[in-house]
Length: 444
Image (tube, rainbow, N blue to C red; front, top):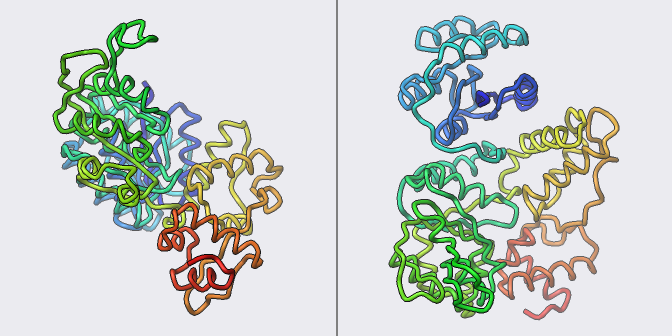
């Protein structure tokens, strides 16, 4: 099994460089740029070695080392990286328990020797082995994400049902997996269910199972999702799309922790935790009679909102660097980064598809890039978006009037006539939306 090394470095370019070198030398690598982010990584997986910068934006390597020593009883060796002027501080860190230190700029051969020595010194695995290997995803360290991670840490050890809110592509399933991995059910399975793909006829069998012969195509007994996930977690993705007829059956299963397979007269006890996610306004769905209020309150014992990419632009450079690195590995390219002009153009987009859209755009850019960096000419042609406006800047729009009208009407349809939601989608305030609707003769 590969040794997993956590690199804690706030310089994104340097961090990616270290990560790339380590991967080429056979290590599994996790990258964090802040103290709080590093704590999340350490708490959520088994780390063999920590390589940390001495100075971080929200703490320092010594503070991290102290926290690790208290949490993991000093089972994980730590190497601190430092500039020449801070060597004395690094020596002090060693006195407090750090395995060794490295002076920047880092010599690869010295780094290799010290990593090998640190790993060899740790004969025992860390006591905190929280999760199995899982798909890596860059987390970011913006204030919005750090707040979210703190709430995840708070609710994960409880038995609360959690409703995860957020736009499409923000990473709601990733947050659900994080909750599971930090929960008391982490040894059990994590089973995601796409509620949008379940018809009212299919859903009972998929969720609760069936007996052989209970309907025409039931040629054998089948365990449902709840029985398969016994002792673990069921993640109901896009729960707002669950057929109304099935919602009562689901509510019963959640309340009683029992399910009855189709065709059976006997209940089966199941012990599962429920996590649900949606990008829909469920309160609106309740008003329209599409979602049960009692089920809503049952799955919403604790709510988390995953921020959109627009609300975490502090992470944009880190996310872009990660996706470039990921695309390089996939496509066999060696793109180093992105030009400042291209980076600013990307940041100016609305990113309605959030991280999923950004990843796809970056992959395309890496594929087309001919030089070391992604340039303006490598970017796709983006659909023009409405510029964020205020009441003092109500007429300063990026689109021609005919495009404004089309986009406002589309937003109102998406929001089902809710003007507050439509204004949020358009990134304008309600007063500006009303003014524009009046201007274009859109029914108020």
